Length: 289
Picture 1: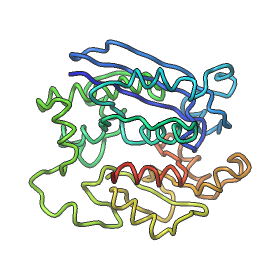
Picture 2 (picture 1 turned 180 degrees about the horizontal axis):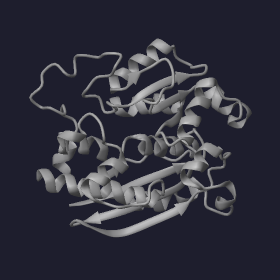
Picture 3 (picture 1 turned 180 degrees about the vertical axis):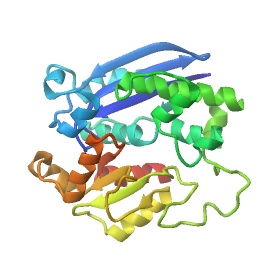
Picture 4 (picture 1 turned 60 degrees about the horizontal axis):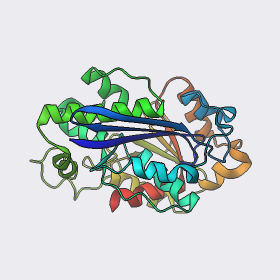
């Protein structure tokens, strides 16, 4: 069984602001190659992101830009499948390619979070975050380092395959099926609390700032992907989607109340991902294709 696993860290809420990339290649159940690099995102560093991954602006001084590593990255992702844990890293890659004027990666993408939700019943509706699944399978790693996270995602695939007997091709088909294949009507029911078979089921999203689309449309799209849509940031929130104008204004220094509350919860240890509206729209496009 051969595949590559990738993870990225970003400098700010704009997913194109990749500042670190890690790639691990697996063959026959073993890591056969590792690659990690810092990347100059040519953008500002938000201290909230820095607090998560520890990478600061001075750390990427002299580091290559995304276009400068594109060809090497393309070669390293030549594999029967490319693994990410959740779709955020995949979307970040698309956004970085778009920003750099590079062609999008033509990969067979496989989400190890969706795999975990189908491999272990206890992960179906909760507990399928990278750290939680790795704790379950007994894999120890250093979270929020791109290479460490990439290797962790790869090990989840290995553990899930050992649990179920499915290979990469089997998992690529399985993740497109309902979590409970015997359930009926799951794909027809789209609710505000989120379609239980959607790829982002279990995520709790809040929209803030001025959006280019209506809040109602954004909520519908999020719910169709599986997200529960809530009007305010709480201890259950996992994603905060910020209007692009609010992200770019004053280099991220002018933030809404919801945005600031999310950052306070992140500082307190809550796992919340802050993304821009354009990243959300791209994510919708990718996951619905």
